[in-house]
Length: 168
Image (cartoon, rainbow, N blue to C red; front, top):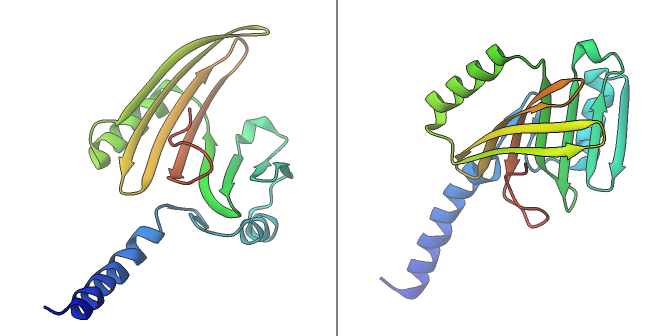
């Protein structure tokens, strides 16, 4: 084959592969690569959270003040593009077992397990995190036990230049 034909073939194959690679996660109305303004617009117009804050230039936090609803979304951005999404769910051992079972059936055994105990101001913080890799995406479940409460979250992240994935 000629050099130009090889280059054309390589670019064509790359073009076919790129659409599948560009969309690494899609959760609810949000997908990796979305711009920060688009995420903010969807949160304001479609999700009806009590509070939407920007704790940093690369983070949006949306939550409800009533903690019984357990609605909290954390969006992470790299260079203005969505690279991470974390959603709280109501913590329970049953929910944890169901999520781990479903993810293991879908993605196989976890690629990373994180288990640690930390000392915080009011006691111990115990964390268990399991993470799976699917293509460019890291899918995780984290369960945290604090002295007065428990938290459970699902996370979806793509590799990026701003922070290592998966995050614990």
